[in-house]
Length: 220
Image 1: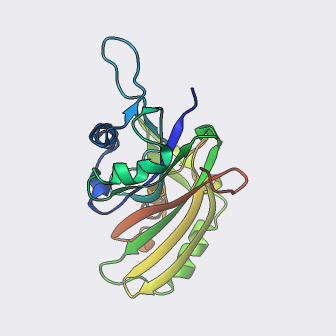
Image 2: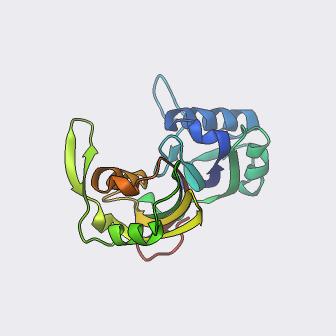
């Protein structure tokens, strides 16, 4: 049976909801809205829903994608209003539609990072950051489930730009690979902390802006 897909936002206080809790939240949202979704078979059936590219805790997004199977309860055009009526603060469904494309076609993601320097940003910070991330190789240590591994993240960075908007604030806009391999935008900050700590911010908040296929077209 064909699947359906939600485009939704996760912002504000909702950014502190973990991925597993977000899945449980959507299960409750569907129930409260009176929308029946397909379940797995067996002794302990569960709603068959999945979220592409789970966010790290503390990150916001205005382009999250959730796949599900609609059984009954509402037409797709009615779903955003019905789901939003029973959703918690920070979770907002923007669109519901038939999922014509496979998630494996999703290749790139664009993120905005707000970098804050408690003592003020270093002089010429934007230019220094551009020079740092223009290097052909950026080998950092990334933690896997078992150990630490050296990984070159430079090939995963497709585009990155910086703009100083206040004495203590720099905006980073980055386009990175989303799958095969994936690069969490937070690893850009890890690269600074490991390789050029004088340029590393004291605090960074990321917001996912958009996701694309390999050709650079918006993925839906």
